[in-house]
Length: 105
Image 1 (cartoon, one colour):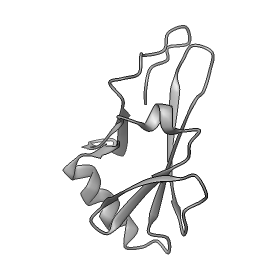
Image 2 (cartoon, one colour):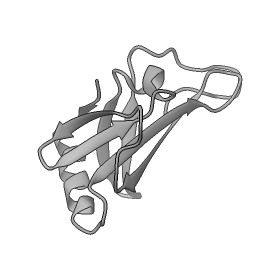
Image 3 (spheres, helix red, strand yellow):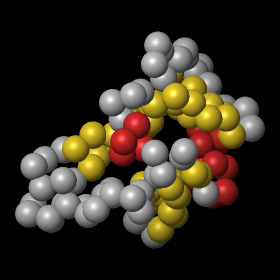
């Protein structure tokens, strides 16, 4: 299950208004041997075979089976700081990576 903070949901809702696709595709994978996990989001127009999904009002978040071990339990946040705005991803079930300064983004 994916949880989305109110701030992140509001920002995604604003972005969705300018997109042709109403599906937000979330993907995650291990990006190096140290265990660092990388997360990505993109707009999509249709679900694919094997996708898991959740609805948040008019927004649907989907992810594939390969991403599921990393996405299950992830908390998507949003921060607005002096130097910019960004989405954050945190999964308390995953251990932070080591070696190359890993961790979750």
